[in-house]
Each structure stands twice: as structure tokens, then as C-alpha cells.
Picture 1 (tube, rainbow, N blue to C red):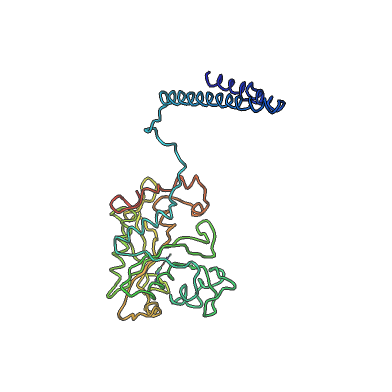
Picture 2 (picture 1 turned 90 degrees about the vertical axis):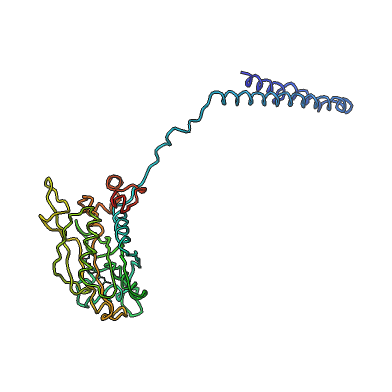
Length: 342
Ligand code: 2NL
């Protein structure tokens, strides 16, 4: 190879024990006269060698490049190497689906703090001092963090305080959904200390149960992507609504499995009712002018019903195999035209 021969030539002439280097070394032992005469000649010789070698190197590189250009090809059409890809968690997916469905009915998404005070979480919602939800064993309290009223701060037990905050800071009419994390001191196969809830609130003039029923029916048909969704409203009790209704959705049994639609059996999916006048008053509004309805349900439970997961604990285990199986492609954004659960 020319490149190798060139390197040998460089070592043999300009290297540590090369011929030209050897000549230069002899200058030290010569007389001043000899050095004055031979020094410039030897240095000129070294410069000549250096320039010949540099020229050779440039030629080698040029030939090398020409050879590579002639033989190497970059194929821009080859697929890019597969990169590891995450998935959208079913809880996030369902929250996006809910936001999309309710946005179409004119609802905005409202958010609020997860650390709440007693008033927003309980008192404003007409929850009596004696209610079991207020007990230490049901709610996580902060032992030494108090609100101005001296009552302990807590981890919100529902997203209702978000609606209270909206009612005290915005003028009606109000149409919001409040999705988010909530906390209860409860843990078994079907309960985790943290879970996800979504609540909805409408405040306007002349709102009645008919509006509630239509809204929930429209929502459940869009969410389960079926027209044959049948609702059953049962009288119930919540401190913050009057009257209160529990909402069941009908299912059919297909090949031994429960499928939403029809009315062979019933499954409870929502709690709801007309907002209690005491709650409207607590937020500084006149209940003889403003009425409304509210509803609440578990996002995790809705996800399990729609996508067929059976163990709630798997939702928060962070097992990548589960996430890859039940997760959603981040690019498939839920839309009403494309199918919310596409
Ligand atoms: C359930 C039932 C419900 C509400 C939540 C609500 C909020 C305000 C005023 C009145 Cl600010 N009501 N929320 C009403 C009825 C039921 O949730 O089973 N949740 C999991």
C-alpha cells in the first residue's frame, strides 16, 4: 500500500532514528563554521522531505475519498431503527376521552389542589360533622398543617372541592368537569388509597333532573360507543345533592361476558343529583335563582368496564408488560369523529 510505504519513508527519514534526523543531530558536535554552513542546508533538506511527505499524504487521502465515494451508498429509504415506545396509561386515556365527550357538550375542564382544607372538602358540601368520611380512619389528615379556621389540612377525598372553588370564583352559568386524583384510607383488591375520580357540575337557571338524565345518557352512549345504552335512575342519598340518584347502566350477556347495552342486568356506574340548596348557598349564590346538577364516578372503574381489566391494583403497579398490553398509542388522540376509544 502506498500509504504504508509513505509512512515507512517518513520514519526512515524524519523519524527519531531517521537519516535526516541523524544528520541534524551531528550539528551539535561540529565547529561553529561547519554549523553555520551545514545548518541551513540540513534544515532545507528537512523541509523538502516534509513537503514531499505532506504532498504524498494529501494524495493518499484524495484517492481514499474517491474510492469511498465510488463504493459507499447511504440508503435514505431504509426504515429507522425501532425505538422503545411508551404507552398512554388507560386512566389518562379515559380522562382524555371524557374531556373530549364533555367538551362537545360545552363543559370545560377544571382543576384544583390535591391538599385541601376541611371547608372545601366537607363543610361547603353539607357533609355533617358526624359523617364517617370525616373520620381519621377514612381520610388522610396532615397532623400539623392547619387552615386559618384551625382545622387540619387533608388529601381531598373527592374532586368536589374543585367545583366549590369554581362556584366561589366564577359567575354562573357553570359547566365543568373535574377529573383528578383523590385519596381515601382504604386498601384491598378493589380499593387503592389513591384513585381517580371525575365529577361534573352544571349551574344555571331552571336546571332540572331532565337535563341531568339527558347529559348522562349522551355521555354514556359516547363513552361506551353504543347507541343501545339504557339507563336506570334509582333514588339515593348524598349529603350534597337533593334529590340524589344512583345511575345504573344495562348490560347484555354475550358468550358468557357482560357487554354494555340492552337490559339483561344492571351495573352501577354513577352517583348524581340536583345540587343541594345549602351547597349553592355556601358558595354565595341564591338557590332560588340558580339550580344545578352534579355527578361523580371513578375513572379507574370506567376504564375497567370499557377495556376489560379486572384487577384495580395492576393500574398502579407500573408493570411494563401490563402497560404495553393495556396502554394506548400516544398518537391516537381520542376524537368524536374518529372514535373516542380508537
Ligand atoms: C359517587 C357520587 C357524586 C357529586 C358527586 C357534587 C359536587 C358538588 C355539589 C354537589 Cl360541588 N354534588 N358531586 C354529586 C353526586 C354524586 O359522586 O359515587 N362518586 C364516586
